[in-house]
Length: 386
Image (cartoon, rainbow, N blue to C red; front, top):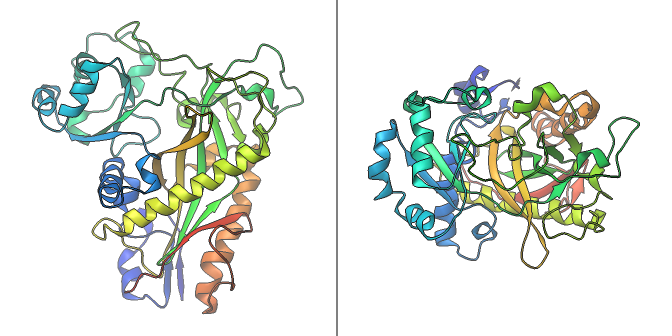
């Protein structure tokens, strides 16, 4: 009997597939439908086309996938894959986010609101930009010809805003002069076998370094600091921008149209977590319909880091938007203060994924979808035949 618990590249995937009854691995061999942004977008779009009533219809930003090696290829894309986006940019002043399909830690992310602005971004990536004044922008540049695959997502204009200083990680919290910061939620999701899906209910809120301001084109380079909440780009700040979602209960909501006396409640948090579970369940269901790009095998499990953004709709209801799913999430960025949630998470993974495999037993009876044990909420269960 063998347990392979390591990074994807260190696992002997041939062993995993040859010895299905004796070898358990901490990663599925094929899961591009989930962890590559352009594959995930295509997966969800295909699923929604067949299931128009799915929650995924409104749970993901509008996304376009493109393959481009050099900036001068954009002209052809505007009349092909991006013709719909071209119309949107001409009809209204909307903002969009460019993301490399296979990069992580915030690399290559840019905002734009026009065809010319996107052209300038790809010229920068080509190394043709003459503006070398913004060190931060160039520090996150990528080489287009090496990545090729990109996604373009609509910018969510009404994110939920909170000031993280209102909940202290030291002995001092601030109650006056609060300013809303954008944040995204990092949820840990555990997929087990073929297939059970669990959401760890201790969710992280990762805040931007500076207060939020709507994007605006003031120069050739847009300041991304009010918009990017990726902790990899804020390593110098330590744990200042990291909270548990539950720690935000009682904080004032500072979004544009919010009454500043309104506060985040326990009921709000429970509803947000419940929505995340529903969206994740439907996303994995969509991935299962693309067996070429996602194969759930009975002797593997995997921990994913899933990013969501919370925004408020026209009725004042909080909704979550799925941003991306990350393999081998950078758990070290949680920081020492919250390392205990990771310890509990790995103990729970041992109980749910590892012990039953080596003990040759099924999981505890009666664990229904939506029920939480050891802080793992069961989101989805379906028996995949092999």
